[in-house]
Length: 476
Image (tube, rainbow, N blue to C red):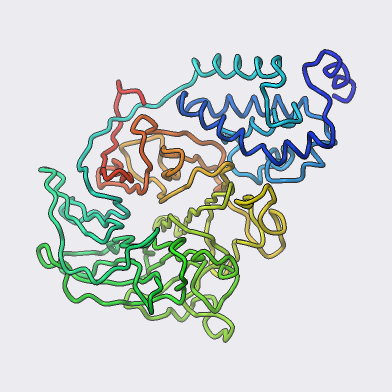
């Protein structure tokens, strides 16, 4: 390639890259993400492999000194090594062409831009799309944050504005549930999750997370109550977390259960990055408790005077998804990164997931990376990273029969890019491919759960609950 590159320069297929151009590319390459997002909205989910091929083509014609000097989260060598998760992330072609042109203005080089557009339009026509059937079960719900399936197949839906609703699946009737406590609804805070333990029966405990006022500040809180007809009774706050700040962001609040009587809850860093590495606060952590709110004796930090005993893992920014696979006994988590760097993690007891010391994201106020790089000894790597951020939401690992090819795949919503991700894993739980669905609904996907039939229930930020089923003839 070193022999070919001068010829490409001479033919003006690839321009000469100055130091100033390199810096300009690094400063403004985020802008190209919007171009990629725009093209992404025009196409279907099957193109990911195509864009990865374009990315590899661009990397092939990129001078090696620029690749090594770049040294940031889009480094092609890091992507090819597999540390970035799936090899088919949609936007990896963007930095390749930024490197080729040495500028964030790709159109300054018409030959290069023409090749990009021709390849994209050609392969878009060949893109494969999977068929699903979409049915609207409910609308007008505000921001439906959590969903839980009752033993009779009906749904409980928690809404961030501080409401709990019963949805009859057959009639599609909505009924308000009374008995909620006072909830601090502000910013990203409000009523979060509603969850049923795996052995739930009528009359037993339901579990909730919400933003509780504590001296004028909000604290992510774990609670439980029982359902008597359409009223909650015997409400109990199990843990008011040590996480309160004046900030109105990064609450976490997702709940899941294991096989052994434990409950997990996520807590965000509450807008203070240092919280995520401070073991004397619950912020920026995944917590594990017994279902009655007591601390399990085998929690990793029990007996450590420099840590809170409820902590299961640390180093999290804003965990939006938490799912325990009771077959494999594995805990999956999804969290928002800053500007880039959304993560999917496989959570293990006592592990540190890095935030904010390591990250694949950048500062909001500058092109500088967050932290001290992407790797550090003693800190875990994600299974998958999204650059640019998709604003990942909840996550599950599919186990049903309705979508036969999806078993074992991760399913996660996207708030910003408004689609449902299906992440294919290999036998080592490494992300090797991804498909994207539900772009046609044009809505932020807040939550996804699996129905007893193996269908999907999807909640969107525009107040809808959707049923997703396989279909033979409806193309997304």
